Image 1 (cartoon, rainbow, N blue to C red):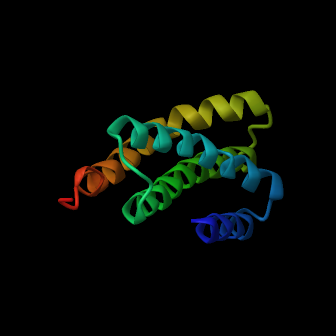
Image 2 (image 1 turned 45 degrees about the horizontal axis):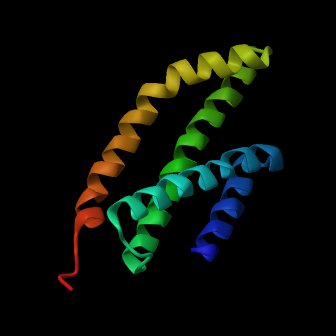
Length: 120
């Protein structure tokens, strides 16, 4: 998992060519981790290999959602929207539904793995 986290940041930096935007997207990972740990505790599960894979997927979904938003903010700036608050509100309004749909699809795809047991 630590190697995956490092690689995620490196790829973000090379994709955006901006340290501050990469850090901003990367900050979604601790928030996603809190939710993941909460649901592991809620289900009474230990951190296992499958949970680690699930966390990597969770990190990927969180980063993808942030990348979609930041990319839209950047394109709005190129289109001439200079007010930061307006860019954030417009970009979020335009991208909220696609983000929710892709995140839901990813979650639904990994639900069987999340609820599977090894039969111990």
